Length: 446
Image (cartoon, rainbow, N blue to C red; front, top):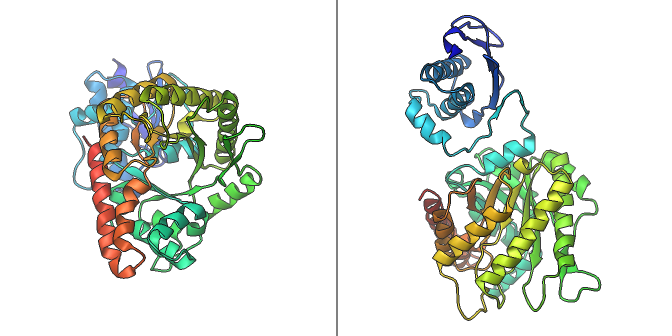
């Protein structure tokens, strides 16, 4: 082992450590070459950037690398442990090598080794941040039609003020960043303001929640394919994405919907929608935005869990085929998908155990390991059903990607009932919302 003759050296204010310069820390990347082995990893301080001084970061990195090499770890392993240590350090504590190795086993971060150094794209960085362990992604992006139905059922007037006040319940939760890494908004919400006068994009960003945007424009009929839909919105999408990036939005979502009935969905409908999803993903990544691709098998149907597994598998296989054809960076792409379960109208409903096993099986068979993450939609499940099924899916891990939830109704419905269009009920609505966040993030932590 050549570590005894190695050195740690930093770009400015060089600090030689045990001889020749072999390590280089430049901004947020550690690169190294030692005895023919090369490795490079990225580290991200995020909100610690103002807490840890440059000298503290250098000290943490150099001591961790040196200790790991002395214990016989490879160069790549040493750099990965240094990355974890600096990212998880506080002003007063760092982690032991044993603890760091436990964290590294989860493979949350990509390590590039053997001379294949690679710069992480903005889309990849955002995908990794969105898939932060123990947090979900809030979907507060109901279209005008969807929110109108919600309000009508409770006799709430569907006007801009009420829509803003409703979404403010969720986006202004004081400890929202404790439970979610990102929030998907509707275009109208992006242009509205929180109570303190900040627009919601800035409001979320300054509170540690990544702002995202729904960009598809709803479902339209596929010509000559009765009963089947495709998603509209590609026209002018590039210009819209450039604007959204300029506004501070860092990820987007596009939904395609598939109903199981008769012989549907057809191969044509699957292929057409997956082609559109892939084109959307390309446009997102061109401007540095992380695409969430959402091919949803609609839950409100009469079909078995096995039929759902078969159709979901076909859709996912075609989706990743199209993403590959268009050279979409999978590490900078997040899949949002339905759980695999029997349709709501089917005579025999699926148990959580069945949902967990089938979902994990289908995903492992069809989702490439390099995908940035997998998030689940609730898709019309009840509040507790979605949480129970999520718990079962987590139970049937490990899977090679980070997994979490991106729920809308399953998080929001109790809050909507508590609020009921009256801001006097604001605190009760936020408490109801927080309770669902607590329940679902508890599932993620086992």
